[in-house]
Amino acid sequence: MIDDSTTITFIQNHIPALESGQYTVEVSQAITANTQTTYSAQQSFYVSGKRFSLETNDVNSVYPPLGSSGQYERVLPHIVINSSSLPWQRTTGFTGQLTNNNKAPWLALLLFDESENIGATQQVTLGTLNSTSSAFFPPRTTEAGESDDDVVNVIDVPLNLFNQICPPVTDLQWLAHVRQVSVTNKSTSNDAAANDTYAVVIANRLPQINHLSTVHLVSLENYTDYMPTANNAYNSDTTPGANIPVGISMMRLVSLYSWSFRCTPQLQSFGGLLMDVDMNPPTLQMPFVTEENAPSSANQTVQNAFGMGYTAMNHQLRNGDRTVSWYRGPLLPLGTPPFLIPPYTSADQLMRYDPTLGMLDATYASSWQLGKLLALQDNAYAQTLVRWKARQTDAVSQSLEEAIIDEQFILPPEGNQEASLKKQSRISSTIKNVLGPLAAIINSGSNSEA
Image (cartoon, rainbow, N blue to C red; front, side):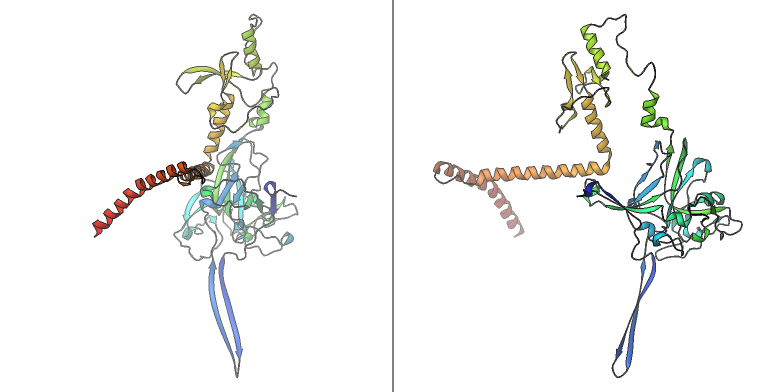
């Protein structure tokens, strides 16, 4: 049996039932009696989809993360979109045949290196989108709900660079897909049901080491006639679009989303850092005992602690006192059997005491506190946790309240006359103390109204 919580399904695309645009429904009916009469009616409607901008909640996540630095030279940047059909809601204008009758998405993810210096994102209005003489933008038709005063974000890409990095239509079909994943354990804002189907758009270039890379999610709607075409099956050789007007030096692209990250060399990775500390003689240690200092029993204990990876750190206690406590990181030069039995409700519960040296071990307490801070940094998780705690507190309070009421008002078993009389007296007293003042308030209100 397949566990759905640990599986992921890749789907070629999600073609919407209707693309964005104007539609007309025509209905006719012919009735034949003595003569034939035909009745007909028309109804027009418009399917409106994203075109020149995205909402904040349209994008689920990006990778590499925004503003991060890491070993990404072998990573194709990609963006996860909450609407699984968004990349196929519009068209590039391609009318040819693709593999397995696939459909090319109208969205593409383009990576720009800092050395290519394409400039910052500009804000222009729809009315001036294709009015420049040097930057080309395909002719567009105004759709319902659009105004020439609407502001859009654009980037102007040098023509030569555009011809080098823009994927051909035959490549676009492989640069977007749909993923179905399990979101059983995913926290969401307001405890809303999490989406389990996402669209993923992937870039076609790798970032350069020690460079800042900027990625733009761009619209290629109606760009087919101006995009490069592939000259072989592997698209290793392309020909620039033949319909680009003469004299054009820049291609204007609508940028729906963008972010930047830096690609660092391998030495900054976890493996690279570990290899970098592999020195002979080793220096990543704290020397304690020397030949001139013969170890006593106490010194030997401290030396053993250093040998296990512990370090003596300054420690300020909750009452303000200062001391020195043991601490070590998660990596140990030897295996140790687990001895902690969770859960723990505070870091102080994980503070350990070393009676041989009279020192505290703050290792597990520090790890607990660090984990708590990392969890609370996620706003959705923190809010979900607070709401869960509130529900649990309300449930416990209600249960306690019901238990108290049952204890006060349920009569004892038959045969215990003395207990029954006491219980009835307590019930009468309670009713008198509660309902008496309440009745007085009600009567007072009635009299004032009269």
